[in-house]
Image (cartoon, rainbow, N blue to C red; front, side, top):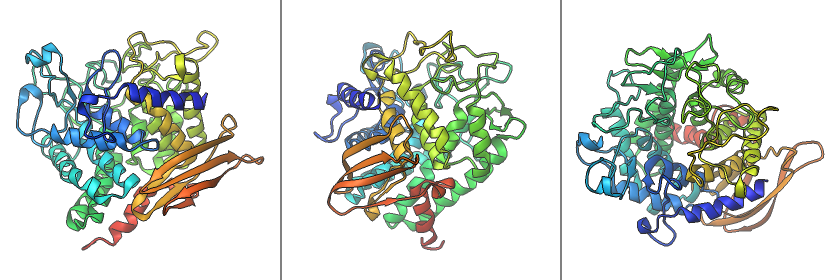
Length: 488
C-alpha cells in the first residue's frame, strides 16, 4: 500500500514535468495536473517542490527561478498584478494568448507570495548552499513586501484579498472556487476576506525567511521579520479563536467579524505553527469529529453546515493535498495518534484507486456500510501534482524527518504504526551527504532507526517529540539563532 503509492508518485512527477520550463537537467518544474491543469500554477508547484524534497530538490531548484522571473512588476488590474506579487497561473492556450482572459500571466492568489519565501527556506534547509539560495532571497522579500503593502486593506495587520480584474478569481486564498467561503448560514462572504490559513502561511514565510536572512548576514531584516511573525501569531489567536467552538474561525469578513463556519482551513493553522500550543488539542479534536473526518480524510466543510455538499469543490470534498501539511502539523505538536490517522486514511484511499494514485479530491461521503469505498469526484484531475507529493510528506511526518543542512544535521523521530512496521529510506540527500536509514517498529510498539550507509558529513540525531510541542526543529533553531542576531 505505502510502497505502491510512493513508487507511483515518482512516475507521476516525471509525467507532469514541464520540459519547456527546465532551468537545467536537474532543475525543473511541473504542471498542476491532468487533464485540466496542464500549466504552471504558482502555489501548486511550490507545494509540490517542498513536499518532494525528501526525494529530490530538483523541483525547488527549477520552480523558484521560474516564478522569480514571472514576479509582478507593475500595477495591472486586468491580471491582478502588482509589483512583487507572485504568479498564480500561466497558460499558453488560445484564449490566454489572445488576451481574451488574463490567464497568460495571472496573479490572482495571495497564497503563492507566502509560499515562495517558505520554499526558498526549505531549499536552504535541505542544501545549506548559499550560492544556490541567494538569488531567491530578494524575490522572497519582495513577495512579503507585496503582502504587507497590498493585502492589508483595513490596516488590522491581517492579509486579505479582493480581485481588481473583471475576470479575476473572487476567492484568492487556498480555497479559490467562487463559492468556497461562506457564513454559518450558507451565504457568501463579501470581499475583502482574511482567511485563517493565509495568516498561517504568512507567519511561516516570515519565520522561515528570517532564519535564512540571519545566515546571510542580514541581521536587521531578519530581526524585523522574526518580530513581525511573533506579533502576527499573538494577534492571530486573539482575532480568530472561537472559544465556544474550540476552533479557529474560517475567516474575518470586511467588518472584521469572525466567519464561524467549520472547515479544514484551521488545520493549516496547526501545520504552519501559527496556532498557539494550548489551542491545538481542541482544534484537532474538533477536526476529527465525524462531521469533519470521513474516514477517508478531512472534509473541506463540515457535513453539518447548510452549504455542505459532498460533491462541492471546496464545500465538502476531501483533498489529499491538505493531509500532508495536516500530518506535519499534528507531528509538530507531538500528536502522533492524529498523524497516524491522517496517514492511514490517505494511504488506504490511494490503495483503492488505480495505480495507488491519490486523485485531486474525492467526494465527502462518510466511510460506512453505505460507502465502503471513497466516492469518486467526477471532475478530479489524476494525476494531480500536489496530491502526488502528499505521500512523501505523510511519510516525512511518520518518520519525523527534519533536515537542517546548514549545520549538517538530519533530525529523526519515527513513530511507525502497526500497518507500517518497517521501511528503509535509501539515498536521502542532505547538503552534500547521502544517507540510507532503516526505520523499524519494536516489539513494545516504539520505533527506532539504524543508519545503514552514510557518505559525506552528516549527523543523524534522534530528536524526542517533546521538542515538537512548541515548534519544528527548524523553528527551534531559528529561536536560538535569532537570539544571537545583532541588536536582538
